[in-house]
Image (cartoon, rainbow, N blue to C red; front, side, top):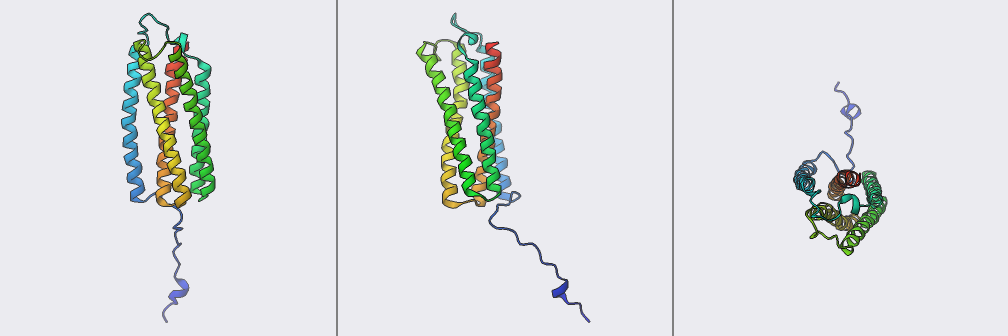
Length: 209
């Protein structure tokens, strides 16, 4: 007598189509491609760091970094960016849990923190320029504004990206596409946080010491 296949057959678990599959080809290819972009950005910032290292003592008879840079301002910017990196990670975690509202809230907090960082940095630039220490004053200041300003431009672009991401999450919810874009954005944001740690150490800590 043939065994009852209906009884002995084990049903395969049904995948939850609401949640993205991190192992799918599109996800892997996009993440790999963005890693390649981050490598090119590393080359850009590496060039700017090398330029600053060569020119930081070329003050043209003007004030040096220890006379112009304020460690307190840089520390404030560092704390803001570190907290924004935490909230960005929490938004990805909320997306993994398929909680669209929470993901948007954490992204919104990341947006506010990033905007605060840009505000503090612009105030620092404005104060330096008002005191007559603009990028045209010396090679040191040119390299300083180029390095820190390039990082700030990346953060400003990240803020625009956050706005677009929030709009997509509100409109489309958490799908494979929006989850992939959120993960890629988090890579970008954490990368900027890492670059700022190097700027804080190399430009501000060593410059004021």
